Every structure is written in C-alpha cells, then in structure tokens.
Image 1: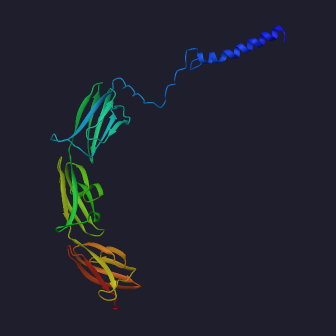
Image 2: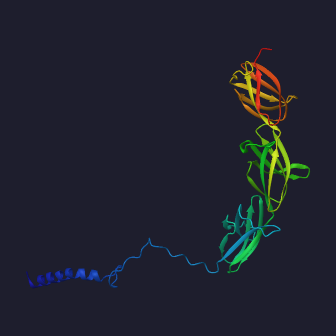
Image 3: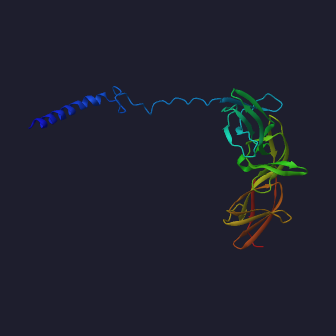
Length: 305
C-alpha cells in the first residue's frame, strides 16, 4: 500500500471512531445543544385555558311574582345575543339549574327562562364584572286526578285536556292534550278549562280551574260512570261466544262504542243504552242501564226471535 492510500485508510478510521462521541454531543432536535433532554409528554395533565379577557360570571335566579319565593325546579334557561339588526339571535348558553351561572364576554344579552308554558325574559348588559340578576315568573301548576265517589280511578284509565277559554268558548285554545293523572302541568296564572276522559267512550267530565301564582292546584274530577263487560251467551251464565261484534247505542240510536271479542270491556257514563250483538249472521239486542260505580257483566242471550 502506497503512502497516499495509507493516509486515506487512517483518516477513515479516525472519522468512524469519532461518530459515537459526536452523537452523544448532539441534542434531541439535531443541534449541538448538550446532553439529550426528555421529550415533553402529550398525555400529562392539561393546564386550564386562561379566561378570555373581559369575561365575567352572570348568576340568575327565578322568583314567583309578588313574592320572594324562588322557583326551585322545572326551569329551562337560555341566553341569547341581544341583536337589533333583525337577524335571529344565536343561543349563547343554556342551563336547567335552579340558579345557573354563565361566563359571558362584555356585551348585550337577553336572558330567558321557561317554567312549563310560562316564560319571562330580561335584557342584560355585561361590562367585564360579575353580575347577579333575577327574573320574575307569574305562574303556578295543575295536578289532576279522577274518582268515582270515594274511589280513585286508575291513572292509566284517564286522560286530560287543558284549554284556555276564549270569549264564550270554553275550549277556545288547546294548551295540551293527553295529560296523565298526577302529572304536574306548569302554566301561567289564570283560569283554564279541563276535560277529563275516563276510558275511550262517553265518560267525560269538565271543570274550570284557576291556577294561582306560586301554587299547585290539585283537582279531582268526579265521574259518574262504570265499566261493563259485554257478552253474547247461549243461556244466562254460559260461556261467551268468541268473535262477536258489539255496538253500544243510546236509546235514540247514536253509536257510542263498537267492540269485537268474547267479552270486551267498555267504560260508559251513567245512563240507558241499547246493546246489539252480531254473530254468525244473526243479530241480538237488549237494553241495559249503567249506574255509577257499579261495574258488571251485560249478557245478551242468543235465542231465536
């Protein structure tokens, strides 16, 4: 090997031997910045974001009108932008808490609270400082049930409709139908017309009820009705024929209810009725009377006329 080749070989060996030392001196990001440092963790605890400059808390409370009694349940709060340009305002925040707190930037807002069918709203201006305010609701509630005499009617057999009277029309505007017994209906203060349906026929009661501010009106509507079981039989007390079609009529011929089966049950208002039973192409009739609170079987005897 000549002098030049030996010099190259020695230089190459020295360069390779120096590499580990150079690697130790390089920093974690490729620069000569001293020993390697640990990489920052991406799974560690996150620090809270600093608040936006000027934001401040707004705390709200709802009170029943004319008193200092706070509303503690059934509330739905909405905070809207206060716009005067005709554009529909966006909802900035919402809550269902009794006394919510919202963090808001400086500016104008409209705070709205609903309590069932009652609402209240107020314009609020935030100026970078904590603010507390109150909204007043003029409302109460209805709680409905039904009975026959001293006996409560099973809630599943009842359905109520609530109306706002308009002029001489007691059912001027429907507020809500299908209300269940025992359900709390939150309403603005005022007088309401309530219709109670017991069963699916003509057992109906009506009442005008007053809702007072901050109070629950607990009302029981008393029905005069009974549930009868319809049967077509070969003889009194015998087994009922299956697949019989029944029609319940008033004495004047108006149809109250129709049903098919061996022994369908029908809830009817107190009064006189005519029962028609159709089976295998034959028609049988009888008259019967419903007395309030007296549930019983109504049998039609299938005998040739």
